[in-house]
Image (cartoon, rainbow, N blue to C red; front, side):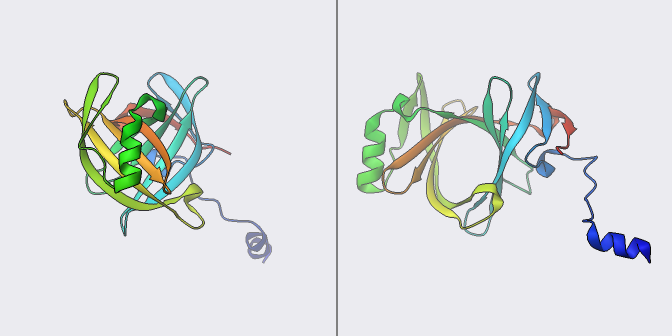
Length: 177
């Protein structure tokens, strides 16, 4: 009887001793590229029925986003925000005025080619009402990196540069409190 009463007042906690990349929550720690990183946020994207997830990770001197997109292929990538002033301002003017993106852009002496345009909703913390946005994805000539321009509203833009990673590159998962 006492056990039943106590279980009513205590939440049953999920066993998190064997977590992996997809299981990470805010506060968790993981090692990558010879540094320890803390998960400071977990977000969800809805691409019209297909979801992808993003974790923002921070170390003592760096920050990046880890994305998980394709459940069937188990694909992960990392990206870092870049200053949109490092891109040609004509890119943003063209997108704002025509709703079309240039087929080719240049960033730090690398050419990137438009590979996909997607619209979706962003859910901060995987909750609440989604914020609509459009993503313009570009791939480098050599195919080893990508550049994404996100349009939030009519004239608000963000940009990031990224690359694919493998889940085995992340080790020593430590659940947060």
